[in-house]
Structures are given as structure tokens and as C-alpha cells.
Length: 135
Image 1 (cartoon, rainbow, N blue to C red):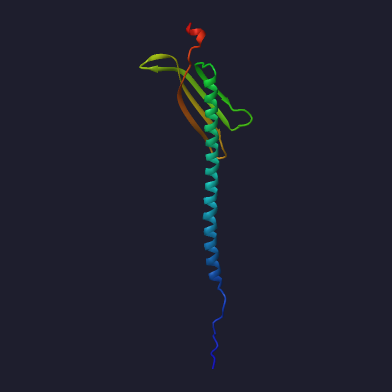
Image 2: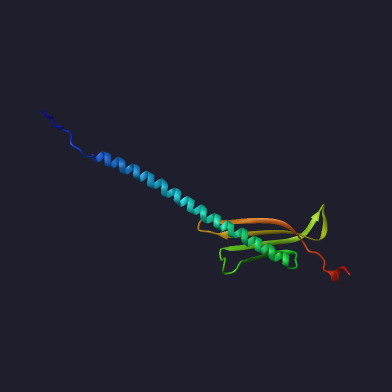
């Protein structure tokens, strides 16, 4: 003689609500993590672009005649978010100016959706006299 089970198969409303709550927590945590990583990826790309633009600006300075002073500008329509500030001064050692050596401070700034950020560089550039000046 077979006994019939009186328990009904299926899930209760409470079990469904608990499962939905767990899924909502996992989805919420995952989406916040994804948004955070996406924002960091954009910030990293902008910083990489700023480093390349700073390197380009330093190469332009090396190829040109250096003039003491403070300058500011942008990088044109190709990089509308980016601007620069440049300070060129005579290099000093113990308050004595070194002829032909310049202290160069370059700051590249950019705006993204969240904030303004910047990259600062300081270096020395030498300007050697031409052959005509040494004669």
C-alpha cells in the first residue's frame, strides 16, 4: 500500500521575495562597480592624453627659442577639454643665474564630467649659443 504525500510542491511567496531581494542586491552592487570602473577608465584615458600633450608641448619648446615669461593656451579643436599653463624662467643655482639654462614648469589641465584635473611637470631646458654667436 502506497502512502500519498500530502505536501504540495512549489515555492512560497516568501521564498520568491527572498530570492528577488538577493538578486536585487547583486545587481545593485555589480552596477555600481561597473560605473566606478568605467569612470576610472575614462579618467585614465584623459590622464594619458594629458601626458602625451605635455610631451608634445615640451618637444615644441625644445625646438623653439625659449622666452622667459608665463604663457597659457589650449591644444586646439582636436583636444577641446585640455589647456596648459607654462612658466619659463632662468635657472638659478645658489641665487646665481646660469646662462642658457631655463627652468620650465608646465601644467596641463582638463575637464571631464566629474571634475577638473591637472598634470604638472618641471624640467630644465638648455639653449646653446649658435656658431655665429660663439665667433
